Image 1 (cartoon, rainbow, N blue to C red):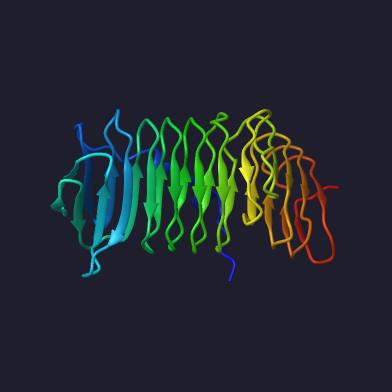
Image 2 (spheres, rainbow, N blue to C red):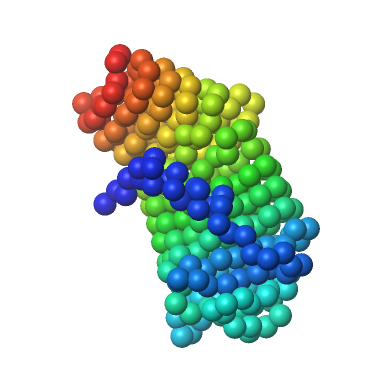
Length: 262
């Protein structure tokens, strides 16, 4: 069953990525649990290589081969580079600067902020949300329904491979026209940004101005936002939502249109 994300839900998730992750400043990767929420906060000036996994007992293990890991409340040290944390239901991570790697091998959904640098993020099976930040970032979705959330301003040449779930490229915070085609060609985002939304990404959400958004052979959900948008579904049973403005929707008999004037 396709999992459709509302803009409000994604905005709330992105807000969780942007805020509320701060721990006291240390020179190590800080990890703590509060109300079943695992928080991972990298230190500045470290190229982190963070992996989230399960122990044999089913507890969450956080490993960072790029830095010492400091256990906070709710976590116990295993090695200098790993801690174990029971009772986790949500994962939040802030990778800070430099070129970092984040890999989630669990089924717990993660909200990950990349920060400055060329980051590589890999989702688990629970549905993850990635915000890359400045730099050329690479996002790889897992079995869940994953989201790549673009920053308000162009933030580098990013690549998003969706994987098996119903995955979404989210540009709804942009205030300049966006051109996005879910075809694996590096010509997406703002002019000259050259993001690459791969052909296994199902959905794309546009921003505040007139966007040109094009799907692929899958069942796509394409949302235009507030501008005068041009939406094209291609193959599959697509949902085209124009939003505000005077929108043009290029659909076929299998598609559903909302808010399309042309």
